[in-house]
Amino acid sequence: MSRRPCAVVTGASRGIGRAIAIGLAEAGYDIVANARSYNPDDLSRGLAETGERVMELGAAFHPAAADIADLTTHERLLRSAIDRFSGVDLLVNNAGIGTRVDFLETTPENLDRVVGVNLRGAFFLTQCFARHMVERAERGEAIRPAIVFITSISADTSSPTRAEYCVSKAGLSQLAQICAHRLAQHGVNVYEVRPGIIETDMTAPVKQRYDALIDEGVVPQRRWGTPRDVARAVAALARGDFEYSTGGVFEVSGGMNIKRL
Ligand SMILES: NC(=O)c1ccc[n+]([C@@H]2O[C@H](COP(=O)([O-])OP(=O)(O)OC[C@H]3O[C@@H](n4cnc5c(N)ncnc54)[C@H](OP(=O)(O)O)[C@@H]3O)[C@@H](O)[C@H]2O)c1
Image 1 (cartoon, rainbow, N blue to C red):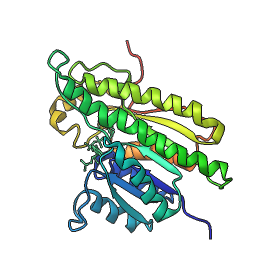
Image 2: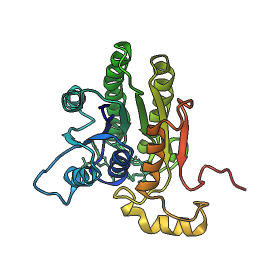
Image 3: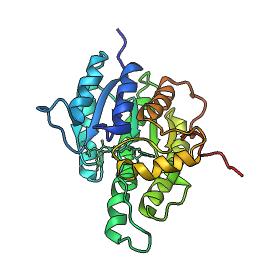
Image 4: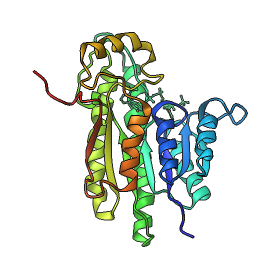
């Protein structure tokens, strides 16, 4: 019997990450789901709820609590995935945090906190997992390894009240290009998925403002994006539908990428 592939999804306790974990379970992956904490006694929340949904689909599930900003957790996260599923086929760098502070008021602490999770954490987590994928490729193990970065339209869209977030996502976008370039020779494909305005906890504080912007036509497709919209794009990449497109940037934003007059 052939082994089911294993996907590690960071920030999978809710929102986009949870939808990605569920979408990948539907696509035939076993799931390692990460967030900062895991409470097995409350199946209606967090990673435990993600696990319930994943296992309903017949996939195996392993919760892995770790703060991605803490580089000392990375090797442990990788090791727990290898111990449970023997190897990692797909890493989805989804964990992320945002801020809402004007550029003129922001502090070094704000920048460090956001970059620490969104960029520095993802940078070294990816390095750790990429080494594992390269080793497997060199051992001739028959896998189709891949890495997906969930960045944002903020990678190239200015929001002066979210400068830290924007620069972290611009950096993450460049990291995706570098990883795609460096890892292509080892058969590891790397993709960037750029969500637009997606209805999650992250956007809940600005829901009314974004409702108004969407009504005014900021999003050509005239609706909020859903976590499922992003998950479907990731599942298509995971299935190998874009096998000849390493380094590809896939925007899931209802057309916000269109330059308009
Ligand atoms: N929503 C949008 O409109 C939108 C648009 C573009 C891009 N994105 C990006 O999509 C990704 C997911 O966003 P979302 O809207 O789903 O956000 P969300 O609802 O706030 O969820 C964020 C997830 O990241 C986890 N997380 C936060 N800090 C972490 C850390 N240090 N270590 C491990 N996990 C951590 C959270 O888990 P715990 O809190 O349980 O630890 C949670 O599972 C982010 O990278 C975000 O920047 C979102």
